[in-house]
Image (cartoon, rainbow, N blue to C red; front, side, top):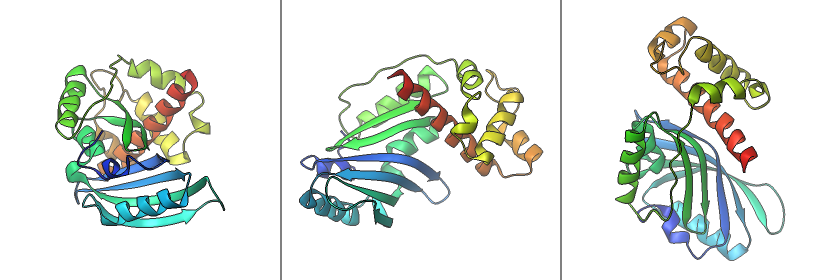
Length: 217
């Protein structure tokens, strides 16, 4: 329960805010968040929009588009947020990869993959300073095996660019421990910026892991 974020102000509303994709722009301390909002009543929708337009952590509603008439209503939402108090940004600086972000009735449900146990526990400490952690679970993951199995069907999940870069990164040993190739070396080889390569890899891994964990559930 993120006590300093906009979600805490919506505990009495009946909604699900499912983040489909997000981009951390560390150079500008901003977060771009693309989500589908499902809301069950007009009053709740009005209150949610009022909270989003006024909360200090939200720099602006980039776009808002209803996807159906009547209720429950699905709304496509894009937000620009402040990175300073962002759970996502806290994970980002610790090397975490987001695999799930769903906000429901004031509670945030997150899933992250971290490079090591120390980073994961540091993240929990940081999050605990900004709210109440109702429940968490730590599990070990073999990243090499995850990527090897998932890439077989990744072409169905990823954009062509995400698939190409993730496959090259895997073949070059980027997901090995320790890594056989660094991010800047990959960027130089592919003729792209480090930020672009990092974003493609993070997005690809998030989609793959989200698909795996959803299937397991």
